[in-house]
Image (cartoon, rainbow over all chains, first blue to last red; front, top):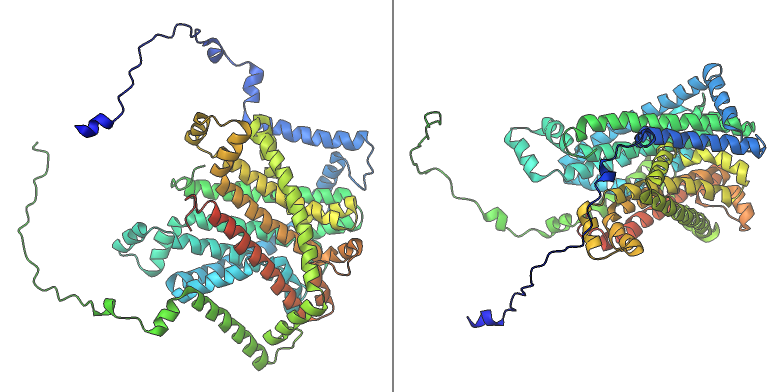
Length: 296
Length: 299
């Protein structure tokens, strides 16, 4: 009883009715949106308008200020050059060359990363090796390996593929290994309970459980590979034989055909958007989002 | 009730044949060798050592030309030589100066863009359109344009660095701010936080994992762009900045042109070293002092 006396008494406030709250205005909430407001509320419309106004600003600026086309061509000029080169020139072939090299490099890099990570998950020394190698090679920009690659593999596609492998391998291995390590013990034990062992265990339990992390690795790897490829072609494109998209940009800038540079940049952006927003987005939607591992 | 299955009653039994548990091995003292191998640092260091020895042995035994693959000892000597005679440190400083300049200006612009994006819906649309378009564009592809607009010099490289920093940082910061939960926002308002206080005390800490991710990606892109740009145009920076040397990328390129391959390897070592220092010292320290301490990310 004595302890209760020490507690503060509850404060009892008198009841009151708040008289002067104004009537709620429900009018504006219930109001029908006007057609313009409804259109403006559509996401796509706003973005198209923004895109269009950016292009219009560009065009207006270059036309009105009478900017030297060698420094900054008008949008229409650049777009025209893109269409002409796409349909009459060999831009398509150059894009194909770039994409082919990219796919070779990316595929090889992924395969090597898969082998490396399998070794890393099955033995402690392999795990240590992956940790060491990724810590060392991940911060090394793969483009810096290009001078060496050209020395070892000569001037050609092989050197490009080598740097691309270097760009993809470490990012993918690092993320996949981290993803595998973070698969919860519960999930692992369920897998073992089902009698999964060795490769089926990896494919049916570890890979799906670590897929968000693996996808992150693949996306980072793609981003590095794409940047490396364009950089390598831009820098040493002439020596890499056929010449790709980066080489097209470099060639145009050497000939001071600035509209060609812009046309090349358009294509680079277009391919980048296609891969990131169509390819990876769809993979994500069909796997990690559908499985509820990641919110869209 | 009749639909419910009957309860199965199993008879009790006692398992007799379980052998004595062998606990000797669990209680056994580890030998010094085992304890040594259990140490993380020792294992990693010995892997590193083994790689170096394998490299040295391979180059010596197979008789590979030094122009293809120099021995490890030759590379180490070249590294020392470059440090003492070739002003390698000044080159690192040149590279880092440009990098810091581009990174800092990029951060400022990214902050402005993100601020506009979280304040108005229109700003958010502008930002998402711009990042969707420009994020997939490798910054190095802008170098030819930058050279045309700003001439041969460090300002061209700073321009490309800006491009490589702004988009990932703005994109991630914006995603982070958008993802701050309504509960946390309301708690902040309940405490009477407004405007600048609201942003610095609530939004930024809550979105910090995402912001830090953006900063790391921005750094990775900027570092790669800088090396690539210097590989080609480093000599030009050297002329305009008045020092005798270009950047680190130029060091690699120039030595490759002179066929001084040990020096190329030494340059690559330096690139790795700078990368490791920035990634594992600076960013890991920031991480452990902020989001790990706050329990937002497990180590």
